[in-house]
Amino acid sequence: MQIAVKSLFALCLLSSATWAVEPTAPTTTPVASVNTTQPKPSSTTAPIISNTVAKPLTAEQIAKAKQQQETKVKALIQDQNNRLKQLEHANLEALAQNQELQLKNDNLTVQVQVLQSERSAQMFLYGAMTIAVGVILGFFIASYVYTKRRRQW
Picture 1 (cartoon, rainbow, N blue to C red):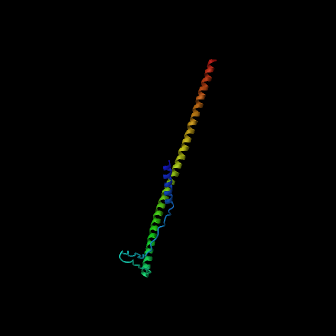
Picture 2: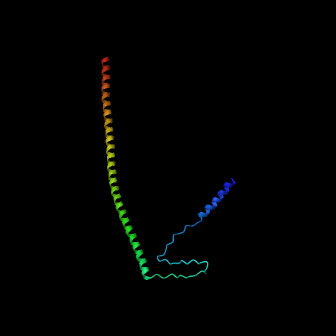
Picture 3: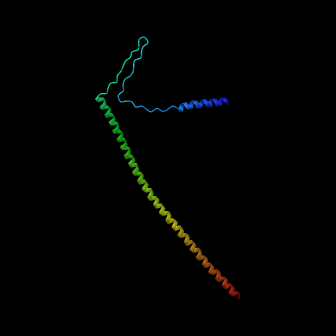
């Protein structure tokens, strides 16, 4: 029992340490990179300290960077325009299909109403025929009983 409690306690401590780590945001790299590598000092000589100063970007490099960014933006805009056209086309197709299905639904609704009214009219006729047959049979039975009583006199 003590081993289970200790292992559970250790597991909680380890997992809480992993939860405490904050995610880091990806860093963007600049267009022009600066070479900051330093030579490794050898064991026989003293370390050499070299100061590398970042060179300012030239006008050509800035123009190239702007041009690359503009081409990327234009490519993204073109891609978004293509996707927009595809979405509009798909939307129009879906609207046409929706209209067609609504027409079919309306047609089927009318057919159901016609069939229901025909069925109710048919049931009305069956009921009328049943009553007519009942009345006729009633007259025959009544006349038969009346004539039978008359004969007995």
